Length: 101
Image 1 (tube, helix red, strand yellow):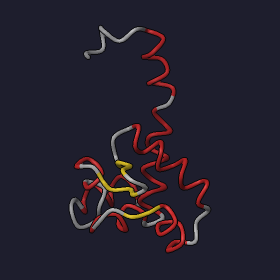
Image 2 (cartoon, one colour; image 1 turned 30 degrees about the vertical axis):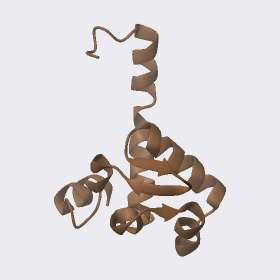
Image 3 (tube, one colour; image 1 turned 90 degrees about the vertical axis):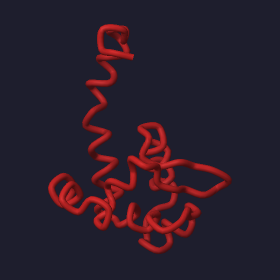
Image 4 (spheres, rainbow, N blue to C red; image 1 turned 180 degrees about the horizontal axis):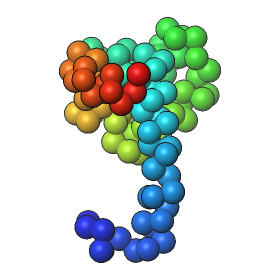
């Protein structure tokens, strides 16, 4: 849908929440969650436990990341989408360092 087709009320929400997209990506990269999911899907408890993170907060962050297309949630496992892999240091180190470090 191009910008002229998006209703103004929807577009203002998209613009207003833009900071949240960046905050979620930053949190996932900075805590190492993105790197944990690089090799294979992981359970929430595994992700939270390995980094000593609050699982309730991580659940909310991952849920938001799923909405913006960075992770997928299937059968209690979280995995990176193709877009999410671009946040991995080995996949795209220049973008990862420039945008999130």
